[in-house]
Length: 162
Ligand SMILES: [Zn+2]
Image (tube, rainbow, N blue to C red):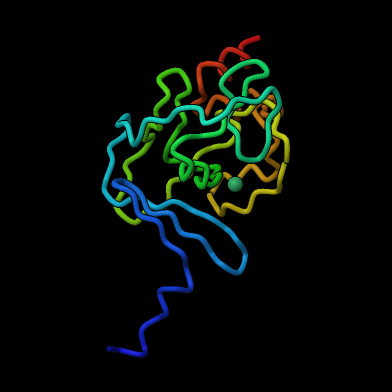
């Protein structure tokens, strides 16, 4: 037994077939990491609605006008935002889809406005990506030029075209 090793109980870990959920017990911050590689366009996991709400909250994904779902399996709600996303919640196919090549150990990250028109809790992003947008409030606040660089759900895409 090597006592110099970091104590694994410092981070709570839940492992599924494709992902590992890590919870920081001090901050409660949750994140989801890939356990295998994915190619762009590949389905990472199917999802369904555990519950449906008429208003958004910080855990829901928007699937339509006044229609916001809680995700099942629940660990998918641990996927954090990045302005440089590697996956998308495709709410037409109800599949989490890879947007980029993902390596085992990479954190799954999605662009919150890709599936949210007007977020319940806007926040200041510190994702550290080259083109970090700063304030994230939902697709309705994106400049046309910015939006053109991103993939969105069919619902959000239709709202952007209005
Ligand atoms: Zn950012």
